[in-house]
Length: 433
Ligand code: HAM
Image (cartoon, rainbow, N blue to C red; front, side):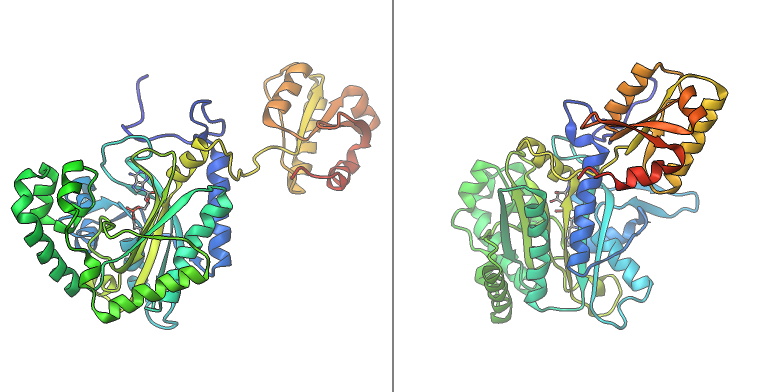
């Protein structure tokens, strides 16, 4: 192979390889269609932002000490000398786009959704790639916990309608930056005497980003952290009320959740609510989606005081979760309705097929044919492989009589139809679900 994919990337194909059924375009589109439909139902409108942004946007918003900014960004200097980044996530670009396009004026509440590619130079494994797609929402302009509940409910409804039965919603509150600063100090004080016995990662995080010490799977760190203070102990009355109100709303919606005080997420921009949805059967990369509130982010990026919150759901992980459960999930229909089979190879027949196909396609009917001079048996096999519902068989006799043989591939019934009436005949037949 002279050229190969870069490491930890993948191709999505019309016919997925048998050992990786999740790499099927029909499955991707089916999932994206469901997300779009739900976003519409919940009142979110689509935004599309470029894949390239000034690197500084992410350094500033995600935070210099985070893994994403310090180790994982795809950076390059362009010919104009600007330092660019392939976007590692979708929130900061949406904030930038809203500021730049004046969306933070009136009306003050904006609810946006996106489906987009993100790039992180991570160590790849199942469910973790260097390019991944997120289906996400961002809502700006309200601190009402009802909006937090709505955003979480949208994510949970997505998993339910997708058919992923077992997900666990983890929630936590990170409070205000001041509350977090106080907690950070308390956590450092608690950990310091034990630090020598902790992992190298914990020792590094102790210096640069102590809250991330909580996000560990290392047994010895977990043991040391067992009696550590939690952020919830450091929340003031207002933050506590918001968190409790959210829990009540989730209860009222019948959405089960667990409070996970170790959930700190890998971005500096979060305030108050953070959440993550974990799936089963995914191994270490079990977060199907995550998000939270970021009431200071817009201002941090140079905009007005504008609260916001949102989430990103990983398309790859949802597809892998379905696969591990043996569920196909929603699939976009890419199959032709009709396949024209030529019983002969004269130029007149060829031209009649070209015209018939064009008529069908203009009428909105997905239709195809063979262009490689295959015999009838092989044309029919191709029609089967593509999943065509009807064969339209055209030979010299048919052409002379101005008719085609129309064969229903599931009932195997065949009937003769005038060429001029094929569209009506197809339209009046029951369609596949
Ligand atoms: P995140 O938790 O970094 O959040 O990513 C969201 C989801 O994207 C993850 O839960 C996971 O399913 C998927 N994901 C992340 N990295 C990878 C990867 N390398 N390979 C495959 N899937 C991955 C954010 O990015 C925030 N911007 C979410 C958000 C929106 N918060 C507020 N608004």
